[in-house]
Length: 200
Image (cartoon, rainbow, N blue to C red; front, side, top):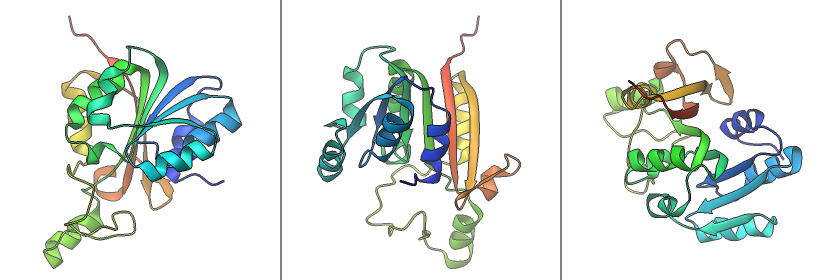
């Protein structure tokens, strides 16, 4: 099974035998890959009932729940990694979700579409309309994306909160691209985060 490119990056950087929580896990593709290739103890939280059923049919431990509400019920540092892939921009309070993600996991992976990519900018500039692309296929009225985050927005957010960035990867199409001008050239971003760096 071939993983989506952002999920493949995450899978490559998860330590074997670790305990993970995949928030917004979809049909469980990442969890299944990590279980089968790295012996990971994977748990999932997913809003969509059809995706929950698909993940459970793979023999995965997934419950139906809402990241905006249900992450608060998980104990501190109960997982080695908490993963939020392509879900941040759909959360009602992404700041609160990220706080819980870093509380629940010793480390966190966050991936999201970059709304400052040049194709998005050109669609707005020349067409005057919200973009519809291969990676953002929904129309403005039926998109699940309610917070249009950019790479620079996210970098500023974690810096302001003193969150340690342990790694960052950027994707143009299905290929990795460099960090130089990533806000313009990358369609997706993946960040690996540590805890909050305390300032004395």
